[in-house]
Image (cartoon, rainbow, N blue to C red; front, side, top):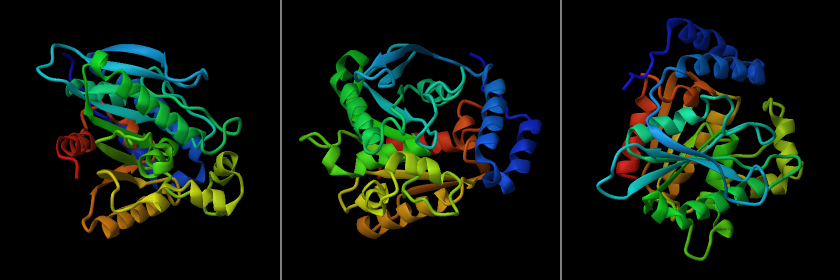
Amino acid sequence: MSNPPEIPPSLRQAMADLGPRWGTSVQAHVRQMVLGFSEILRDAPKLATVTRDVPYGADPRQCLDVFQPQGPAAARRPVLMFVHGGAFVEGEKDRTAEIYSNVLWYFARHGIIGVNVEFRLAPAHPYPSGTQDIAAAVAWVRAHADELGADPGRIFLMGHSAGGTHAAHYAYDARFHPPEGHGLAGLVVVSGRVRAENSAENPNASRVEAYYGTSPATMEDGSPVNHVTAQALPTMIAVAEYENPLIDVHCVELLAALTRVRRRAPRFVWMAGHNHTSIVAHFNTAEDELGRQILAFMERPA
Protein backbone atom coordinates (compact mmCIF):
# COMPACT_ATOMS: atom_id res chain seq x y z
CA MET A 1 0.00 0.00 0.00
CA SER A 2 1.39 3.40 -0.94
CA ASN A 3 1.35 6.11 1.69
CA PRO A 4 -0.86 9.17 1.23
CA PRO A 5 1.22 11.96 -0.35
CA GLU A 6 2.32 14.98 1.63
CA ILE A 7 1.08 18.38 0.50
CA PRO A 8 4.31 19.86 -0.90
CA PRO A 9 5.65 23.22 0.30
CA SER A 10 4.96 24.79 -3.10
CA LEU A 11 1.25 23.97 -2.85
CA ARG A 12 1.15 25.11 0.77
CA GLN A 13 2.67 28.39 -0.36
CA ALA A 14 0.06 28.75 -3.10
CA MET A 15 -2.66 28.21 -0.50
CA ALA A 16 -1.12 30.87 1.71
CA ASP A 17 -0.77 33.32 -1.18
CA LEU A 18 -4.31 32.84 -2.47
CA GLY A 19 -6.04 32.71 0.89
CA PRO A 20 -6.36 36.40 1.76
CA ARG A 21 -7.50 37.25 -1.79
CA TRP A 22 -9.58 34.14 -2.44
CA GLY A 23 -12.81 36.04 -3.10
CA THR A 24 -11.30 38.33 -5.75
CA SER A 25 -11.33 35.65 -8.47
CA VAL A 26 -13.09 32.58 -7.18
CA GLN A 27 -13.26 30.54 -10.39
CA ALA A 28 -9.58 31.08 -11.24
CA HIS A 29 -8.50 30.19 -7.72
CA VAL A 30 -10.67 27.08 -7.71
CA ARG A 31 -9.02 25.92 -10.94
CA GLN A 32 -5.54 26.54 -9.53
CA MET A 33 -6.28 24.45 -6.44
CA VAL A 34 -7.95 21.66 -8.40
CA LEU A 35 -4.96 21.35 -10.72
CA GLY A 36 -2.44 21.52 -7.90
CA PHE A 37 -4.09 18.85 -5.78
CA SER A 38 -4.85 16.62 -8.78
CA GLU A 39 -1.13 16.47 -9.50
CA ILE A 40 -0.18 15.16 -6.07
CA LEU A 41 -3.22 12.88 -5.69
CA ARG A 42 -2.16 10.75 -8.66
CA ASP A 43 0.11 8.85 -6.27
CA ALA A 44 -2.44 8.55 -3.45
CA PRO A 45 -3.60 5.08 -2.35
CA LYS A 46 -6.71 3.86 -4.13
CA LEU A 47 -7.98 0.80 -2.32
CA ALA A 48 -11.48 0.18 -3.56
CA THR A 49 -13.44 -1.39 -6.39
CA VAL A 50 -15.23 1.40 -8.23
CA THR A 51 -18.41 1.15 -10.28
CA ARG A 52 -18.96 4.39 -12.16
CA ASP A 53 -21.93 6.20 -13.65
CA VAL A 54 -24.69 4.10 -12.09
CA PRO A 55 -28.04 5.75 -12.91
CA TYR A 56 -30.38 6.74 -10.10
CA GLY A 57 -32.72 8.68 -12.41
CA ALA A 58 -33.55 9.23 -16.08
CA ASP A 59 -31.40 12.33 -16.72
CA PRO A 60 -27.78 11.63 -17.80
CA ARG A 61 -26.53 13.63 -14.81
CA GLN A 62 -28.59 11.59 -12.38
CA CYS A 63 -25.84 9.08 -11.80
CA LEU A 64 -23.37 8.08 -9.09
CA ASP A 65 -20.14 6.18 -8.52
CA VAL A 66 -19.83 3.46 -5.87
CA PHE A 67 -16.52 2.86 -4.07
CA GLN A 68 -16.44 -0.56 -2.41
CA PRO A 69 -13.63 -1.05 0.13
CA GLN A 70 -11.33 -3.96 -0.55
CA GLY A 71 -11.38 -7.08 1.59
CA PRO A 72 -14.14 -8.88 3.46
CA ALA A 73 -16.26 -7.11 6.04
CA ALA A 74 -17.33 -8.65 9.34
CA ALA A 75 -20.58 -6.70 9.21
CA ARG A 76 -22.49 -4.38 6.94
CA ARG A 77 -20.50 -1.26 6.22
CA PRO A 78 -21.48 2.38 6.74
CA VAL A 79 -21.97 4.61 3.68
CA LEU A 80 -20.68 8.10 2.97
CA MET A 81 -22.47 9.89 0.12
CA PHE A 82 -20.57 12.90 -1.24
CA VAL A 83 -22.15 15.75 -3.24
CA HIS A 84 -19.77 18.09 -5.10
CA GLY A 85 -20.01 21.85 -5.52
CA GLY A 86 -19.99 24.15 -8.54
CA ALA A 87 -22.12 27.19 -7.67
CA PHE A 88 -25.28 25.46 -8.96
CA VAL A 89 -24.37 25.90 -12.65
CA GLU A 90 -21.23 23.76 -13.12
CA GLY A 91 -19.16 21.03 -11.52
CA GLU A 92 -18.72 17.32 -11.98
CA LYS A 93 -18.36 14.40 -9.62
CA ASP A 94 -15.21 13.76 -11.67
CA ARG A 95 -13.90 17.31 -11.95
CA THR A 96 -10.56 15.68 -12.78
CA ALA A 97 -9.40 12.08 -12.69
CA GLU A 98 -8.58 12.64 -9.01
CA ILE A 99 -11.09 15.19 -7.71
CA TYR A 100 -13.64 14.51 -6.27
CA SER A 101 -12.98 10.79 -6.20
CA ASN A 102 -10.26 11.57 -3.64
CA VAL A 103 -12.94 12.05 -0.98
CA LEU A 104 -14.37 8.58 -1.55
CA TRP A 105 -10.95 6.93 -1.88
CA TYR A 106 -10.14 8.30 1.56
CA PHE A 107 -13.24 6.88 3.22
CA ALA A 108 -12.94 3.56 1.40
CA ARG A 109 -9.48 3.20 2.98
CA HIS A 110 -11.27 3.33 6.31
CA GLY A 111 -13.78 0.62 5.46
CA ILE A 112 -16.63 2.90 4.40
CA ILE A 113 -18.63 2.51 1.19
CA GLY A 114 -18.30 5.73 -0.78
CA VAL A 115 -20.95 7.10 -3.13
CA ASN A 116 -20.03 10.05 -5.37
CA VAL A 117 -23.25 11.78 -6.46
CA GLU A 118 -23.85 13.78 -9.63
CA PHE A 119 -26.88 16.07 -9.96
CA ARG A 120 -28.61 18.26 -12.54
CA LEU A 121 -27.50 21.86 -13.01
CA ALA A 122 -29.09 25.28 -13.39
CA PRO A 123 -30.29 27.12 -15.34
CA ALA A 124 -31.83 24.19 -17.19
CA HIS A 125 -32.81 22.63 -13.87
CA PRO A 126 -33.76 25.29 -11.31
CA TYR A 127 -34.74 24.98 -7.66
CA PRO A 128 -35.61 22.49 -6.21
CA SER A 129 -34.06 20.05 -8.72
CA GLY A 130 -30.87 19.62 -6.68
CA THR A 131 -32.81 18.68 -3.57
CA GLN A 132 -34.95 16.28 -5.57
CA ASP A 133 -31.81 14.63 -6.98
CA ILE A 134 -30.35 14.09 -3.52
CA ALA A 135 -33.66 12.56 -2.42
CA ALA A 136 -33.50 10.17 -5.39
CA ALA A 137 -29.85 9.28 -4.75
CA VAL A 138 -30.50 8.53 -1.07
CA ALA A 139 -33.47 6.39 -2.10
CA TRP A 140 -31.21 4.49 -4.54
CA VAL A 141 -28.63 3.74 -1.84
CA ARG A 142 -31.29 2.54 0.56
CA ALA A 143 -32.93 0.37 -2.10
CA HIS A 144 -29.58 -1.24 -2.96
CA ALA A 145 -28.22 -1.56 0.59
CA ASP A 146 -28.33 -5.37 0.56
CA GLU A 147 -26.33 -5.79 -2.64
CA LEU A 148 -23.85 -3.12 -1.51
CA GLY A 149 -23.37 -4.78 1.86
CA ALA A 150 -24.37 -1.46 3.40
CA ASP A 151 -25.92 -0.78 6.78
CA PRO A 152 -29.11 1.19 6.00
CA GLY A 153 -28.98 2.64 9.51
CA ARG A 154 -25.58 4.22 8.87
CA ILE A 155 -25.95 6.25 5.68
CA PHE A 156 -24.24 9.64 5.97
CA LEU A 157 -24.61 12.53 3.53
CA MET A 158 -21.76 14.99 2.94
CA GLY A 159 -22.00 18.03 0.68
CA HIS A 160 -19.53 20.72 -0.33
CA SER A 161 -20.47 24.24 -1.47
CA ALA A 162 -23.60 24.03 -3.67
CA GLY A 163 -23.60 20.30 -2.97
CA GLY A 164 -23.81 21.21 0.70
CA THR A 165 -26.86 23.31 -0.11
CA HIS A 166 -28.64 20.44 -1.81
CA ALA A 167 -27.61 17.90 0.84
CA ALA A 168 -28.65 20.09 3.78
CA HIS A 169 -31.91 21.17 2.16
CA TYR A 170 -32.88 17.54 1.62
CA ALA A 171 -31.81 16.58 5.15
CA TYR A 172 -33.74 19.37 6.89
CA ASP A 173 -36.80 19.92 4.70
CA ALA A 174 -39.36 17.19 5.39
CA ARG A 175 -41.33 18.08 2.24
CA PHE A 176 -38.74 16.11 0.25
CA HIS A 177 -38.63 13.03 2.51
CA PRO A 178 -40.41 9.77 1.79
CA PRO A 179 -43.05 8.68 4.32
CA GLU A 180 -40.48 6.73 6.34
CA GLY A 181 -38.26 9.79 6.79
CA HIS A 182 -34.97 11.11 5.39
CA GLY A 183 -33.16 7.78 5.83
CA LEU A 184 -29.90 9.29 7.04
CA ALA A 185 -27.75 8.79 10.12
CA GLY A 186 -26.07 12.17 9.83
CA LEU A 187 -25.17 15.14 7.68
CA VAL A 188 -21.73 16.70 7.04
CA VAL A 189 -21.82 20.24 5.64
CA VAL A 190 -18.44 21.35 4.27
CA SER A 191 -18.35 25.00 3.19
CA GLY A 192 -22.00 24.77 2.23
CA ARG A 193 -24.06 27.66 0.91
CA VAL A 194 -26.74 27.10 3.51
CA ARG A 195 -28.35 30.51 2.94
CA ALA A 196 -29.37 31.50 -0.57
CA GLU A 197 -28.78 35.19 -1.24
CA ASN A 198 -27.73 37.45 -4.09
CA SER A 199 -26.15 40.37 -2.26
CA ALA A 200 -23.37 42.51 -3.71
CA GLU A 201 -20.95 40.78 -1.33
CA ASN A 202 -21.52 37.45 -3.05
CA PRO A 203 -19.31 37.01 -6.15
CA ASN A 204 -21.51 34.06 -7.17
CA ALA A 205 -24.77 36.01 -6.89
CA SER A 206 -25.66 35.52 -10.56
CA ARG A 207 -25.15 31.78 -10.18
CA VAL A 208 -27.40 31.68 -7.16
CA GLU A 209 -30.03 33.48 -9.25
CA ALA A 210 -29.59 30.94 -12.05
CA TYR A 211 -30.80 28.26 -9.65
CA TYR A 212 -33.27 30.09 -7.40
CA GLY A 213 -34.36 33.00 -9.56
CA THR A 214 -34.52 36.46 -8.05
CA SER A 215 -37.51 36.04 -5.74
CA PRO A 216 -36.50 36.60 -2.09
CA ALA A 217 -39.29 34.25 -1.06
CA THR A 218 -37.88 31.41 -3.18
CA MET A 219 -34.40 31.97 -1.77
CA GLU A 220 -35.77 31.87 1.77
CA ASP A 221 -37.71 28.71 0.97
CA GLY A 222 -34.60 27.06 -0.44
CA SER A 223 -32.20 28.08 2.34
CA PRO A 224 -31.38 25.01 4.45
CA VAL A 225 -30.83 27.11 7.57
CA ASN A 226 -34.51 28.08 7.51
CA HIS A 227 -35.61 24.45 7.86
CA VAL A 228 -33.69 23.56 11.01
CA THR A 229 -35.89 22.18 13.79
CA ALA A 230 -35.30 20.52 17.13
CA GLN A 231 -35.70 17.19 15.32
CA ALA A 232 -32.85 17.94 12.89
CA LEU A 233 -30.60 14.98 12.25
CA PRO A 234 -27.05 14.90 13.71
CA THR A 235 -24.97 17.45 11.79
CA MET A 236 -21.28 18.25 11.50
CA ILE A 237 -20.11 21.53 9.95
CA ALA A 238 -16.69 22.42 8.55
CA VAL A 239 -15.44 25.67 7.02
CA ALA A 240 -12.11 26.88 5.67
CA GLU A 241 -10.19 29.88 6.93
CA TYR A 242 -10.49 31.38 3.42
CA GLU A 243 -13.97 30.90 2.07
CA ASN A 244 -16.03 32.17 -0.80
CA PRO A 245 -17.45 35.37 0.71
CA LEU A 246 -20.31 34.79 3.18
CA ILE A 247 -20.19 30.99 3.13
CA ASP A 248 -18.46 30.83 6.52
CA VAL A 249 -20.89 33.43 7.87
CA HIS A 250 -23.87 31.35 6.84
CA CYS A 251 -22.34 28.09 8.10
CA VAL A 252 -21.91 29.74 11.49
CA GLU A 253 -25.54 30.82 11.26
CA LEU A 254 -26.40 27.14 10.76
CA LEU A 255 -24.22 26.26 13.76
CA ALA A 256 -26.11 28.80 15.86
CA ALA A 257 -29.51 27.62 14.65
CA LEU A 258 -28.75 23.99 15.46
CA THR A 259 -27.31 24.94 18.83
CA ARG A 260 -30.37 27.01 19.71
CA VAL A 261 -33.00 24.39 18.86
CA ARG A 262 -31.08 21.27 19.95
CA ARG A 263 -29.65 22.91 23.08
CA ARG A 264 -26.10 21.76 22.36
CA ALA A 265 -23.54 22.65 19.76
CA PRO A 266 -22.85 20.29 16.86
CA ARG A 267 -19.33 19.26 15.87
CA PHE A 268 -17.70 22.23 14.13
CA VAL A 269 -14.28 22.35 12.43
CA TRP A 270 -12.44 25.48 11.23
CA MET A 271 -9.65 24.47 8.85
CA ALA A 272 -6.74 26.87 9.32
CA GLY A 273 -4.80 27.70 6.16
CA HIS A 274 -7.35 26.06 3.88
CA ASN A 275 -9.56 27.66 1.26
CA HIS A 276 -12.95 26.84 -0.20
CA THR A 277 -11.47 24.24 -2.56
CA SER A 278 -8.54 22.78 -0.63
CA ILE A 279 -10.89 21.86 2.21
CA VAL A 280 -12.09 18.97 0.04
CA ALA A 281 -9.24 18.65 -2.47
CA HIS A 282 -6.82 17.62 0.29
CA PHE A 283 -8.68 14.40 1.14
CA ASN A 284 -6.48 11.30 0.64
CA THR A 285 -3.28 13.27 1.25
CA ALA A 286 -1.24 12.81 4.40
CA GLU A 287 -3.19 15.61 6.09
CA ASP A 288 -6.30 14.04 7.53
CA GLU A 289 -7.51 16.22 10.41
CA LEU A 290 -10.87 16.82 8.75
CA GLY A 291 -11.12 13.21 7.65
CA ARG A 292 -10.52 11.99 11.20
CA GLN A 293 -13.14 14.41 12.52
CA ILE A 294 -15.70 13.06 10.05
CA LEU A 295 -14.82 9.46 10.93
CA ALA A 296 -15.32 10.28 14.61
CA PHE A 297 -18.66 11.90 13.81
CA MET A 298 -19.74 8.82 11.85
CA GLU A 299 -18.76 6.62 14.79
CA ARG A 300 -20.79 8.69 17.24
CA PRO A 301 -23.13 11.09 15.43
CA ALA A 302 -24.57 13.73 17.72
